[in-house]
Length: 130
Image (spheres, rainbow, N blue to C red):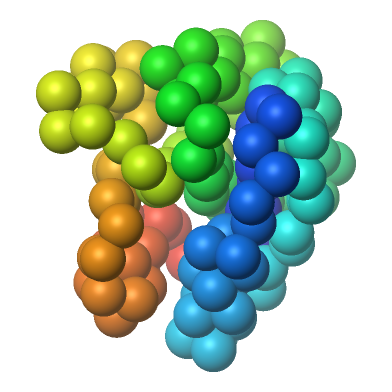
């Protein structure tokens, strides 16, 4: 089992995809915390530390992923939590994926990615507590 925080950084008000991912991860046997809409990177990092999560899944449809996703990684590092795996998804252009990975985002999932691909990636790349 893994503890995973699903978060929506910034002002993006659409969270259906985040909720679908949260349910798929829950159905795959993980404990999932959904932080809700309009979270700052600092709030997300603080929640991740307080909840002792193994991973943070970020969702963005607003186009602010290049600013917000790396800031979450920075905020985690500032709290001594660089071991938390950060992955993301949403409407993210192909040309932004590599720079996001260079900024510390472990993986980026785009629209249409099968849920079992995401849950399998988590199983393969996020250390388990058991």
